[in-house]
Length: 296
Image 1 (tube, rainbow, N blue to C red):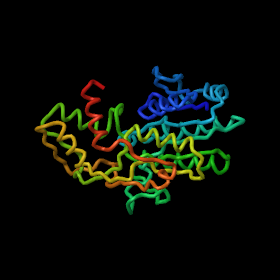
Image 2: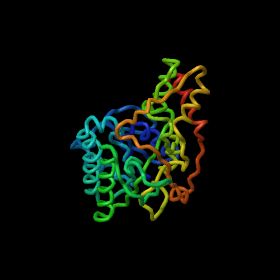
Image 3: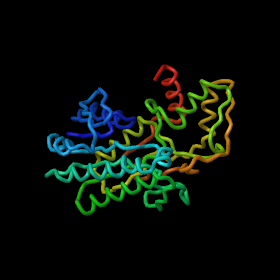
Image 4: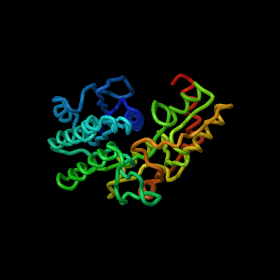
């Protein structure tokens, strides 16, 4: 199968491309930040004029859209830039794919940020979408664009709402901050109260889940991608406390703009495809710490 992966130099894009190569697929990566990897990659912007010709040349069977901004804080600081990097980028990509005689199956990587602060837990795919950050709003708009192309243009589109992805290769967010703060000081201050919760999924499990959604035939369009386990931030801090002895963790009771309070996903749809967690949070955190300590 011919597969194009956008954002192929990113945390998820690179990993999913390598995984698909190991499954003997013909993978082509596209990223504005070119870097050599295990599959053929092309360094240009999806907003450039050469995109349409490239799509016509490859004629992909599957298109996995990992490109775009994934930074809630940046979206608050510069919402227009985030809009361009997510909404405009997706729309132009789909318009170019619409020129092809045969449309590829299309997987869009969305985010649990579309839910905002849910009224009930666990969160189901048909629950109300109420984003509380520009990033979440823009992902919601992207989903609406995808559904338009699915319903009106008859694209075969799948949407993956990813919850809290982590793992080796990710140089931002909670775990990255914890490792670096633990190496720099004996006293570590974190945002919030520690009672905030997330539904974490390791990159290895995430890639397998995304490939299931991409490659399996299912009438479902939208999938929560997580493990269905609510884990408090203070539990993550406790795991780091075991790894970094004699450290003190405290919470400043300040909530970052755009950050939700509690998340846990209903992953019934994902489980129907055969998904099972392989990397526990304990194992995943320990692997991440070793990766950082070994110089990434």
